[in-house]
Amino acid sequence: MIRHLLRDDDLSPDEQLEVLDLAERLKRDRFAARSLEGPQSVAVIFDKSSTRTRVSFHVAISELGGSPLIFTTASSQLGGKETPQDTARVLERMVEAIVWRTYAQEGLEDMARGTRIPVVNGLSDDFHPCQVLADLLTIREHHGGTAGRTLAFVGDGRSNMGHSYLLGGATAGMHVRVAAPAGYAPREDVVADATAIAARTGGSVEVGESIDELVRGADVVVTDTWVSMGLEDEKQQRIADFAGCKVTDATMALAGPQAIFLHCLPADRGFEVDASVIDGPQSAIWDEAENRLHAQKALLVWLLARSRGEELPTA
Ligand code: CP
Ligand code: NVA
Image (cartoon, rainbow, N blue to C red; front, side):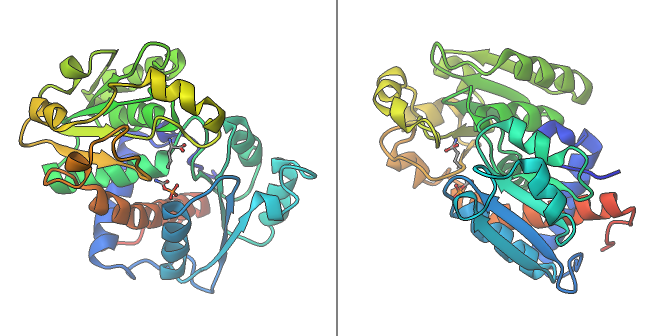
């Protein structure tokens, strides 16, 4: 069966653990897996801007022995003249996997429907599962594991990051708390899915408006931009709506000295987070950014092995 990562819960708890274990191994030994030896190619397509996703996939594919084929939608036929499904039918004849950063989740689902190669969500309006894999790896490194730890997300609960922390965190057995202003709570179906996953993994889900209540005692405090890509027209309204929805030194003090601070980046210092926090001693953002490489390399190895019916590389 061809395996995709379109949203975080496409990996079961056991599968997510396999990917994260592999990521830890590949971080120690960067060239241990050669799943794309040939070189075989992976297409990485961008409808939206990127620094981390572009560079980390390029390096990951290269270090697996492969050849990254990176292009923008604007410079291709996808979007305007050609459907995601037709694009995938062509690419699957030439490349081993497709990573796509896009707007609507439905486009990714169309692309994945019936393809013979894995499709990876490199960020959509609704989910950013590659980022959450990197964050979980970072949490393991700093806290010794994920199960039973508490992650508090402060910000736009309806955003890709809000949704992915709910699904990915619950899959990892975490207690996921989302503090969002009125009107920006996560989608109800995502909360329901995360709650159902948490019931199986021993995690839990809590959504509310009070930052103080929700960050208290958290092991991980995380935020993201108030204005996600594609929502630039709403910027002024969002700056007004999110006023006060910020991670400050006082927020970190409520969480406690054990808490780490994460941010997927890019960050707007002074808006969703104060510089003293993101550049301060509890911040693990550079580890988090580096872990995009290791997590995505492991993800590609895992998806290719499972889709090809091969064993995972052993240590
Ligand atoms: N965090 C993240 O996905 O960064 P880029 O937009 O730079 O890829
Ligand atoms: N929520 C942000 C994440 C950027 C990596 C956005 O979609 O712009």
